[in-house]
Amino acid sequence: MSVTGVPASRARPPGPSGPVEALRPYWRIFVAGVREQARYVAATLGGLLANTVFGLLKSALLLAAVASAGGSFGGYTAPQMATYVWLGQGLLGSVDLFGRSALAGRVKDGSVALDFLRPVDVQAAAVVSEVGRRVFALLPRGVPSVLIGAVFVGMAVPASPPVLLLGALSILLGITLSVATVYLVAVSGFWLVDTRGVQTFYMVVSGFLAGLFVPITLFPDWLLVLAWSTPFPAMLMFPIDVVSGRVGGWSAVGLVGAQLGWLTLVLVVGQVATRAGRRRLEVQGG
Amino acid sequence: MADTVLAGDLRAYRIVLGSRIRSQRAYRFGFRLDLVSSVLVGLVELAEVLVVYAGLSRGLGGLDVAAVVLVFALADLGFSLADMVVGHCDNLSTYIRAGTVDVFYLRPQPLLLQLVTSDISLRRLARVAVGLAALVAGVAVNDLILDARTVVVLVMAVVCSTLTFAAMFVWAAGAQFFLVSGAEATNAFVYGGRYAASQPASVWSRPLQAVFVFLFPMAFTAYLPTLLLLDLPGSGWVPGWLGWLSPVMTLWAWLMALLGWRFGVRHYQGGGG
Image 1: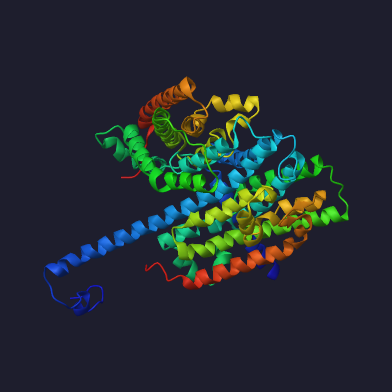
Image 2: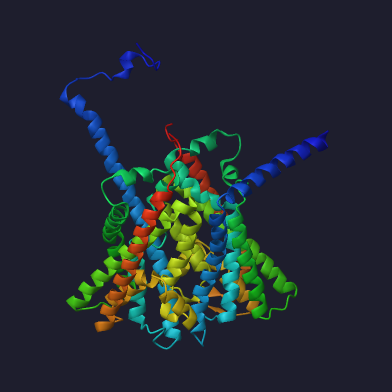
C-alpha cells in the first residue's frame, strides 16, 4: 500500500536491518547538527569581520583626531583611545544595543501566555537566559576583537588584578543592564502590540548615548547631561572606562555603583510593567 | 479602450500602494516612532561626525567642520536613496534560509526586479529627506557658488553615490547565495562602507585605502567629490583630481555587483521544498 505514490520497495532502502539501520537517522541528525553549528561559526566569523572593519575605520578616524588635537582628545590619549575603540567593538556582540528580542515576538503573537503559565518569573527567566547567551558571546566575539586591536593598533592594558576584577564586574553589569532595558522594549508590546518603532528608537538612541561611535566626553554639555540621565552610558562607556583604567580608584567604584543603581531601577520598572501587562494581555484564538 | 485599460492598471497600482501605506500606519504610535527614529538616525550619524570635528581647531584629514558636513550629506543622500530602491535586497538571506526564495524563481520576471518591489516605505522617504536637508546645509555653510562646474560635480556625486551604494546592496545579495547565514560578513562592507563613506579617506592606512577607495569605491561617493567641490588637494593615494573618475568607479562597482549576482543566482540549488 502506497499512499504517497512511492512504491513500497523504494520507501525503505535495501540493506541490512538491525541496530546499524536503526541508528542511521540519529547519525544523520547528528551530522546535520554539526553542520548547522558550522554555519554559526561562519556567522560568527562574519560578525568578527564586521567588528574588525568598523573598528579599523573608527580607530583610524579617532587616532587621527587625537594627533590633530595634540596628543589628548576628549580626555583620551592615543593608547586609551585605541582601548576605547577595541573594547567597544569587543563588547558590541554582548551588550545589547539593537533592542531585538524573541520575547517581543511572543508578546505580539500571544504565545507569551504560555510563559506566564510556567513556574518561573517571566522577567527573570527572559533576562537570565539572554545574559547567558551574551556572556558566552564574549568568547567568540569579544576576545578576538580585543586581540586584533591589540595586535594591529596597540592598546592601554590595565595591570593590576583588582582593576581587572572590577572591570569584569562592570562588563557583566553593563551586559545585564542592556538586556534588562531591552526587556522593557519587549513588554511595551503589551500596550503597543507592534514594538518595531520602539525597537528602532532604542537602537538609534542607545548606541549614540552609550558612546559606541564617539566617547561621550566629546559631547557638548547639554548632550552630556542628556546622556547621563539615561542608562545607556552605564551599558558600554562605564565598563570601558573601568577596564581601561581611564577612570581609576574610588571613581571607578562609583561608576560600578551607578551601574547597580540603574540596573535596580530598570529591573523594578520591568517587574511592574510585566505585572500590569499580564492583566492587559488579550490572547485571541482558540 | 486602451485609455481605460491604462487607467485601470494605474488605479490598481494606486490601490496597492495605498494599502501598503495604510498597513504601515496601522499601529499608529509605532509608526510615528518609526518615522521619528528614521529622521533621528540621520541626525545622530551627523552628530557623530560633528562632535569629533567640533573639538578640533585644525580640522581632520584636510577637512574642516563645514567641509565634513558636505561629505556626510553626499554619503547620506546617496545611501538613503539606494536603500529606498534596493535596500530590500537585505532580506534575501532570510528568504534563502527559509527556502521561500524558490517562489521568486517561479515567477516570469527577473529575480532582481522582483526584489526591488514597489514596497514604498515612508520611513525610507523620511531618511532621504534628512540627506537632502544635509546637502542643502552643506552647500550653504561652504558658501558654494552654484556655477556650471559645481552643479555638474554635485549631480555627478549624487548620481554616482546612489548607484555605487545600490551596487553594494546587489553585490551583498549575490554573495548571500554562497554565504547563506553570513549576512554580517557582507554588512562589513555595505554598512561598514556607509560608515567609511562619511570619513576623510586621507586618515586611512594603506590597506584600508585599498579596500574602501579602490575595491569598494566608497571614497568616490562623498569624500572625493567634496575635494572637487572645495578645490582641496587630497593626499597620497587619494589626490583631489581622482574624484573625476567617480563614473568609472561606479561602473566598476556595478560590474562586481552584476557578476556576483549572476554567479549567485546560478549557484542557488533550491530549498528542497
